[in-house]
Structure formats: structure tokens, C-alpha cells
Length: 86
Image (tube, rainbow, N blue to C red; front, side, top):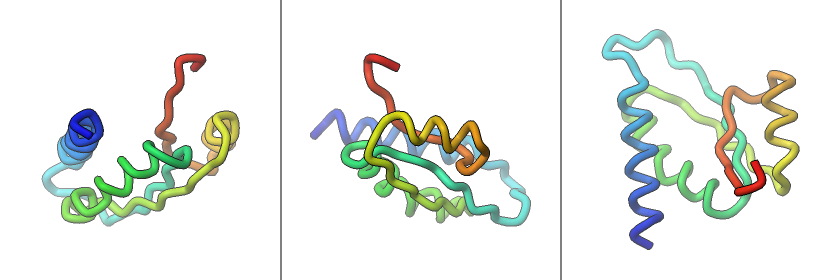
């Protein structure tokens, strides 16, 4: 549980620092995640991102290959997942 809280805090902090003080018009970022922990972490950070003017659309995948393919084809702006094999 502590690890999850730390991950959420770290992700939220990175979002806060990534947003310039005078941000351009809000763009919806499409972020791909794998179901489970990665989706939970991103969903927990959504209110913080929204508060800082960042709109995020979460797109869940059931495997580890599809998010990379979607990112490579330009269907996603980013993806969040990691396994030892990657």
C-alpha cells in the first residue's frame, strides 16, 4: 500500500512540474495503461492533473504489446506500464 501511495505521489508530482505556469489551451492527452495497478495509479492522479489544467483520457489495454503499437502509430500520446521483460 505504501509503495502504491509513493507511486501515485511521484506521478502526480511529475505531472505538476511538466505543466508550464501559463499553459496553452487544454489538450486532451491519450495515455494507454495496462489494467490493474497502472490504471489505478493514473486514475488517482487525474484530479491533480485536472487541477493543473491537464485533461487526460485513460485507455486501458489487456496486454503489454498493444500500448506500444498504439503509441508507435500515433494513437496515444504516452503509455504507462512496465514489466521486467521490457
